[in-house]
Length: 128
Image 1: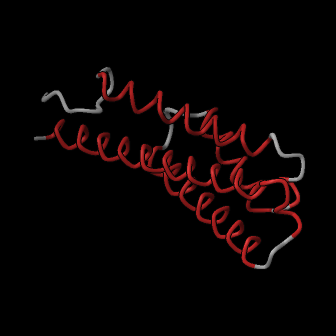
Image 2: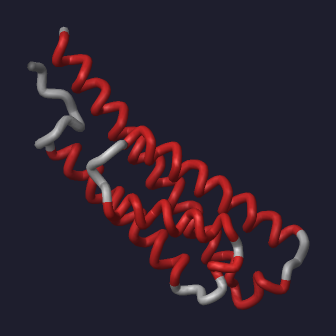
């Protein structure tokens, strides 16, 4: 079998997992540091998805990439909506924390997608 970048046991695979873990835990921590994040459903959704990411890093890269993308998109759009209507909830630079959390979730999604592509490439190289 051809040694594919990102396949299990390579340094690229290890780096992807480390960055996924780092971005998802940082996203989760930045959301949970705000005491009011649970009042908005999309922020709760993002926190739950990132918690799943931390719990099951090795399972379902494709599914988790789409889940983290949808959570990041929801959190980013909710934050932009709050900023556009001058919601008092965005005081004390709270919405900046939400934007950073959504950005980190987008980065986590990109790494999940890379990992999923490498896993598909590894599967293809098994049969050819």
